[in-house]
Length: 133
Image (tube, rainbow, N blue to C red; front, side, top):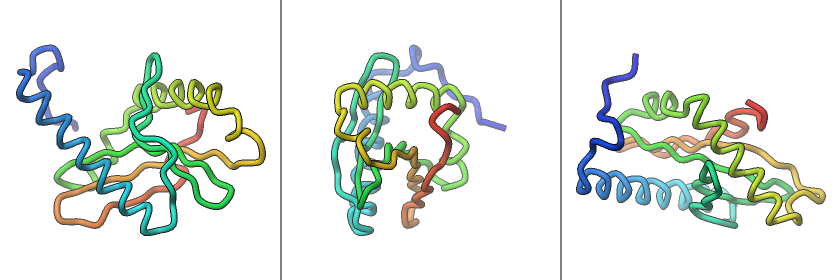
């Protein structure tokens, strides 16, 4: 069961800034962890109509579109990627691919997730879900 959260429209400006700051910090932690494992950044915070991709990274012949979720506990971070969030990411990925056709020629494309928890090493889940999910 998900805990009650205040709707986005009712959050204060300070709360939104704090959430954005925490999200940016988690993305940097995730990117550093991925780079230590040989991944190279292609894009960060790619915004498209109807969605956003936190990180686009590549290693070998794989391009991974990475959703980063930070929570106090890693298991809570996994639950935060809802079906709607996956659809929004898929729309952003399709948008990114139209603007970066090089990634469709001979590259393996994958949707990954990195979960960041307090005091824990980030958990990288390769192929966290399918493109059409």
